[in-house]
Image (cartoon, rainbow, N blue to C red; front, side, top):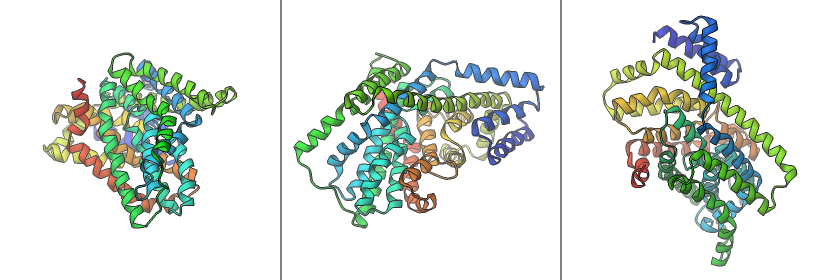
Length: 432
């Protein structure tokens, strides 16, 4: 692709974003404008529309609205509160107990719901008042909630791993789910370590000691929610159902659980369905336009040119991976996760798989962890805005306490990047 056409693509996309055009439309318009440099308007628009339509014609994508629906049921069904209580009796006695509870609850709820935004909202609304009451610094408590909410995007089931599977041309979803466990747990443990050290240094209080009977009671109350993880992933690994079918099972299970808990009534269902529909529409429009743009980039040979440019800089896998990480960290600051995965997977995946021999499952985890950092950073940090909104705290006051958490996440990212077995050991052990 000629430099002029690349420039037009980048400049037009940035222009639409700056003037306030929604990102899905910005992606689509930038793609069509780039096509107009080499194709007439009618075939350009028709081809782009066809690519959008055929891109959404996928049975795998059906899992996204179903997992979103399951997440909405969890968010409204009392599951978050039970997970917080369970986490509190398990780790509340450690230094900075409530901070550790916040991270662990986000890991559990995020893994079950598959949504960082839902996790930050649900756990933040429960934990922030409690941490404030115990004299925790408000900005620190919000920073803990925001950074730990992203762990659920790596720990399965995760919608973004399904989207990566689509963008990569069919990498096994089951293998990606398995690959996310150790990196997700590693990130959560690293955040717990820093939060505990910070809380200990500032002498934040711990939670009152609980008896084993109370621990058992809280575990039994949370057990049905935790069981969903084993049902979904266990069913996929055992070959009982596909990832898409697993999402349907998750919806049915969450619906039954919510009514058993008596946290949802039938009159609440229309509102939950409307929220699910709106979120699904936003996500799938992003998916459609990003698939169209991915085709434009393939047509204009962007991946081949990027690969050649990177290899001209260096033939060292260590350095190329470092450059890709830096680019993705930068991209994550300005672009939401879904379009970033759909746009940059076809650009970088050929480079790392064909030139560096990196497993596409391993690269998928690298990509997702990179973009998780971007969810916590302005100006497009979705989780940052949700976390601050729930706690009613200004974004400016949260940035400084967030910086150490960024550094912890980046350290984990480097470990995941340069130690492939962290991602690949579990899938290989289980035959994926």
